[in-house]
Image (cartoon, rainbow over the protein chains, first blue to last red):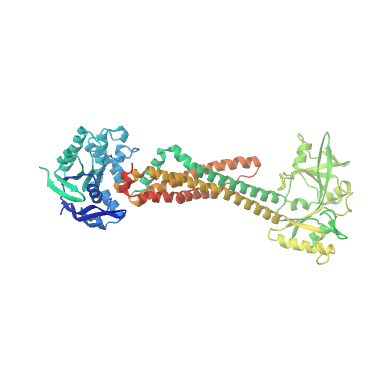
Length: 227
Length: 410
């Protein structure tokens, strides 16, 4: 069974009198270990799709099963647990808490999963080593470069061993060289078996993945492997 | 689900980010709790002083004084008519079973001269049961006995203040003093009683046998056998009311007062006076505490205000925490705990400051300092309650935030 199974997924918003179809009968499936880029112009529905897969938003109609969990049937608490254990988020603006050290930022999701302190620290330390920040564990975000901050964010996303990493424009705030480094890190993680979905509008980023899903007006207009 | 330990650490860290703001936020509660604590301590101190000073007059005591009398329909001032006699006192001692000690006394004032020094004071002519009735004793020397009292010997027992004024450097016992031209031997000095509840120095007094005072000091006022006061002591506080009724009945009989006519004496029940004064101070304390409690509420509003600002400022943080798996309860607890921590910290500091203020003021006013553990527990409990009450709404707002909206916020 595939990791993500979407059937006729719909998400509608009411804007005054108008009903906006942010997602219009979207169906696709993602096998374990896939590495996907979702592209499309702004307003095409790609962010909505990411929010729904990530359990931040709920579909208006259709079914979405992620890692065996039917997202339409989870309540607020169930969704929080789902986000904690199944999803690892990476954001364009990193979203690190400025008062916390790199270690403490990586520990954050494990605070909500109830991992004991010692285990938490060991895991955070190991993950920071993994993303190449072994020397910067007690630095605060302001003492780190953009690329280093995004590495901390990726380590944080991996903290609870998620089934899938959702990255929303992860290289949008980075320069070309740093972008290459982050993409190399993603590739490595994917090779180790982590499923990754990236939302991007940069062609080079999309080309670095295995599969590109293109969206327009709430529909998938193309879905093909990268040659 | 966050463990309590992590929750506390998270909230504490958030409060440390902006220490000045946290301190100012807690200040409202600090002032509120401090004023409540100070007011309650002061009020209870005042109450205790009232109680102790009234009981220092003698516990379970009735004091009978000549009452307002009417002569030909004209009301006279209370005490102006010498209606009480030594015979009345003897009758009470003989006929009223509940009277443990009966002490008639005659009050006068005189200039007292002891070689070189002189002092104007109250002189009270009493009988030996007086000490028992007033719960008093001698600190040195002795009191006069029944024989000396009967024989109207010229002996005197000095109050502590008089002894100190007249004999600052020597032992007054066996020394001689002159009172109204007569020479007296000092046989004893009384224990110090301090101020009475009415601000009078109870130690500024000289006691001498009743007959001596009647004949030589105040003899010209009234008839030979009248007294200005009779003190009657009951066995217990509970027996006081019955004793009062019995004494009143007896005196009305003896004074031949017809049914429906006004008494020509007044019986003062000291414990009922004490009760009234205690109630008055308690009501006053409650009023002051209630006014102070208003500032505690204002402090709570201050906390709510800052917590709402904090929730707005940290919207992104809340969104992120939710994305990372924080449940509504986790956020609710995190922000609720911050508010409660602020108010409890304010409560503790307020308790310390309030105690300090209470200590300062009670020392200044010479009132005993009463600070029970109950006051401390109540103060801190109330500030925690304020934290919960005013922190709940901001925390609920934070918990309800939509993570997508929150993450989009700059």
